[in-house]
Image (cartoon, rainbow, N blue to C red; front, side, top):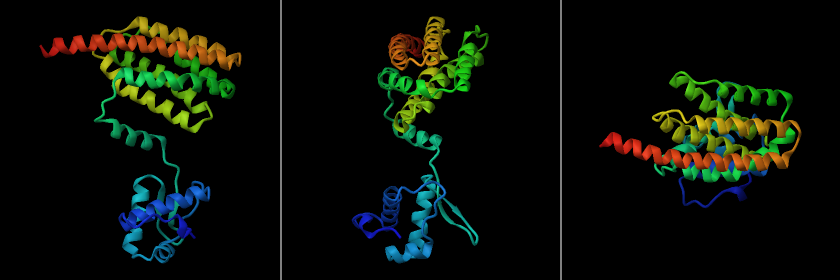
Length: 254
């Protein structure tokens, strides 16, 4: 049963009160994906509300990705782990009209990526290291088409995504993956309008190779230092890119 003390003041819609109470109850009781919520009748009694209000609340939780609704004798509302993709999409929607710039994103990236690299170092398996090597090798070939250029840029970001997934810190992992999503959306596709920045690509490859060696040797502090240098280098190239893009689009519009 959901503790009445977890209920919030009645200044918001009744169904929203239920949603927030369920969230607090789940957090307080450390419930896990797959755990079952009270059934509709129990929720109606606990919150002294109609079936329609309870169903509206459960539908809201389902839309948010927190529960799945199953029908039948063994049905009901089951807790679900919100997929990263859904959480990322919602946050990117929030930022859509904020229009963060490349420099804004790289400023955040410079803060989080070095810590991710340090934390991931002891957690990387031989398979992880092999995957990182393959991503670097993919970027070493001279691209001949736009699709190959785009594929290489995504491979560069996938290198960082893998590290975020292995860092062991849920908050840093989410931020790291999210920042790389933003770079893909706001930088890579802008960059496609310009000639290949081979100097930038070569710098990325060089840093990624050095990082792999640090990971193999278990040198977490070195990995953090290398990643910081890598991010400052990438930030420098991005500032140049922003300037070239401004000139390019001014030329197009004129």
